[in-house]
Length: 213
Picture: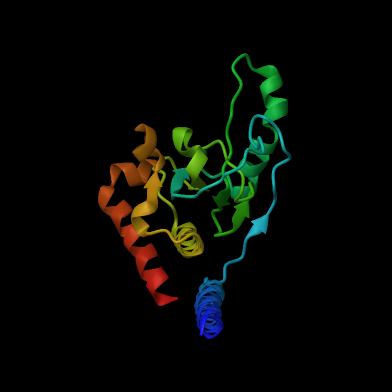
């Protein structure tokens, strides 16, 4: 009788273990499928990758371990384009040789006057753009034609596409899109600090774009 009981107990335990393993396997497959499905729903955007050379002034190579938000900036250099600003970041080691106080600056992305999107920093590294939020945010610089800092329609549309893409990729909400101003009080991006309604509209446009995917 004892032997039979032991056999029954062992058999029951084995069946229980198989049952648990089956559940774990099912959950793993479901999570994997959700990841695949999520990847398939990302909007298609064209990104021109022109990574900065690693240097201590604009691309220090420090790991970006978590992404909790996206910070929008304006270049504050009217009429300059994406590649102009990218090259400025890349040339900071040379520029700083002639300065007493070095400049530290960069951005993950720059959106140009014709809607081009240039990537300067990999998304697993920090940029020098958003002060104390460098360690947990992606930065996006935007070009503009005049001192008002307002983005033209082409730049604006490309920015919305990029922000929607990044929000979906990193599971962020439109509330996670902030201005440099929201971090430090700096008037950046200038037009969208002075015109709060326009900033809220930008967030709403990103939300709608995400929902349309």
